[in-house]
Length: 195
Image (cartoon, rainbow, N blue to C red):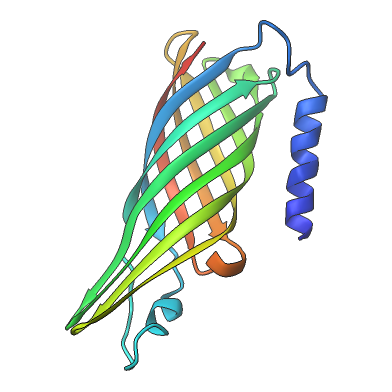
């Protein structure tokens, strides 16, 4: 609960410490692809089988659509929506996969003095929708859950032109509440356009 309060205060400071609603403020949009290193709680998957089994979820990939507003030279507010391809575990007579859809808001603190490279740190809050598919022999089940997540990241934007930039980020994403078994690290690269 303290983390949610802290992130809400950060968002409030980002919005009201700048002239966020000026007519000439630049926006951007882009897409990124990421390599996702699984930190999914294996014991959560094991609990869904009647017999003792060892579950080990594989790493996967992600796809995220970004849209943001550069509030000032130091602060950016970004919305994102994405899909994490299934975390999979296959074993003898069983299969187990977890799909994740996510959406959220990030606040980025940028260091703009190294132009054309701009490193940043980001904090974000969002929601997860997970779908878990389990099959053991002839039995199968599907479970769906919703919950909050938080994201902490370090990255950099590399400007190719004043309006086009590449972004790369290493982030830690972790679910809370009913989706607290979802945790992963993501290394992503994306292409963005300012307008």
